[in-house]
Amino acid sequence: MNRLSVIGIALIVSLLSTAALAVPDRIGDFGLLDSNGDFHQLSRYRNKEALVLMSYDNSCASINSAVSSLQAMQAQWGEQGIAFALINSSAESDVDAIRAAKATLGSDFPLLIDDGQIVSETLALTKAGEIAVLDPERLTLIYRGPVSSASATLSSELAGTVDGTMIVDAVGCDLQFPVKESHASATPDYATEVAPIVAEQCATCHREGGIGPFAMDSHLMLQGWSPMIREVLLTKRMPPTQVDPNIGHFNNARYMTDADLQTLVHWIDAGSPRGAAAIDPLTEIEMPNWKEWALGEPDYIVKAPKMEIPATGVLDYIDVDVELPFTEDKWVKAVQFIPGDESVLHHLLTYVTAPAENFDGGEANTTSVARRFLEGYAPGKVDAMTFREDTGVYIPEGHKLSMQFHFTTNGKATTDETILGLYMYDEPPKYENFTRSVASQFKIPAYAQDHESHAQYVFDEDVVVTGLRAHMHFRGKDMKFSMENEDGSMTDLLSVPNYSYAWQPTYELEQPVTVKAGTKVHVTGAFDNSQYNPANPDPSQELTFGLQSWDEMFIGYWTYHSATPSN
Image (tube, rainbow, N blue to C red; front, side, top):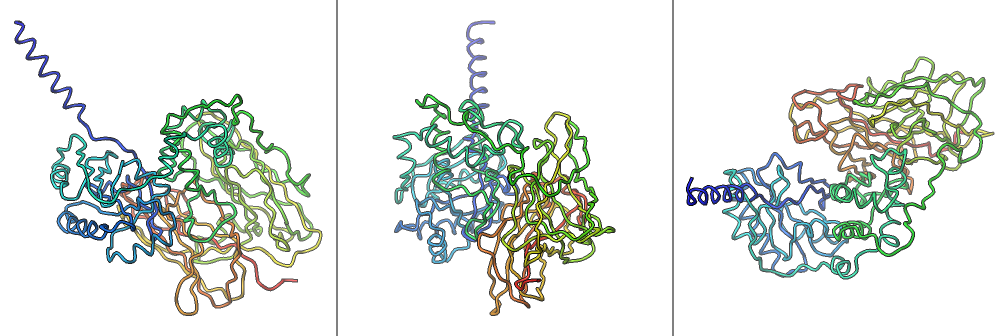
């Protein structure tokens, strides 16, 4: 082979290699609430060819003109599988102000609220009115620039020929990123800024023996897992709050502030530096001893049956009944769960049930039933649950406990022997706690991406609502709890815009809500039975109510007590 042929072959190989490496810039997945409280996640747009996001800043004089240009683009491309939305890229964090600005637009584009400007930073947006064209399937950026220069990229995306990211200089008002600039000049300090956030928000579950998949017990561990930490923060998988922070407020919701989010992400983006501190604060954390009774020795200890948990596989819920020896009525004022192996016990629910009653307590056959819910265990819940003053759970003589366990395997076979400690009142309290299920019957078509459901109930007495819990299975998408006012308007009490089957706490209202007799309460929501739902085991199935996890449920639980003392 002569030298010219060798050079020619080398050139061809070089060109082919260059072409193979010419791929769009990966930006990863993210999730944001919009100004209406609806949840949007890039990967959930995989039914679309592309998602076009326009940076929005209400203080920019030219923003209305930019939005008009986006409307013209939507008119041209919207029916070809291209989705459109605005993203609030300004430093404005007041949601009410953002909503007021959206109301003046005269546009039906969803306006995504970019917490701490993190997504806008990730997309490298610099101008109000600039657009980013994203490929939801590959989680990549294929274009950034003005609306006027995007047509060629959209055509290529529809044709499947995009092989890189096109960047065009945009014009318009400069976006301001004051926190990013501050952190660029002074990277957040690990010991004094980052570690305290991790200790408060993460380390309770992410510790040796905890339910978290890895321990956050040192700088080295944080640094090694930092790409995943960034991803779960941007997709809002962690902290597992779920709730819309702009509707109600809850004692046990794991809210993360914009400032904390910015600190963590900017520290990770800077390379997760160790800093100069001599002592690593995360190695010094002393976790509560979850094998001890927080309130002293209980009045009665309940021992659940020993359960064998395999190393791998997906386990369905396990229902067990535990008999009680009481020869008289009892009132519970506090309860504590001590899990046998908290690394696999994901959560546990416990009801007080009559001798012939099982765990579901009739919920499978009715749209609403009031029950005696004792308490539940969830990851990180190591302390005792004390009921509100003068309230408690009633255990009539001869009743038992019905318990439902949900285990997650972790690669190691183990056993679980969970125990419960019950603390009793000496005298009956004024109010008895109940939990009422408000449910609906439904039929979810195969592949339905947004199948809505609605349940309602009218309280026949004055009650005080203290907690709310959403319950669906793998296809659950979102759920909202509301009460109907006399004028027909709605007061929203809780919104779970990004429901997760793996996280179902009872959210405790910081301020209990009085519901008058005759008030209708509503539970609204939707299912995602499509192939774009990553939790969906089989989108081809038509679904109805069923007790197994591969079936579905739509139940809103209202925890309350009568507004009138019972004794």
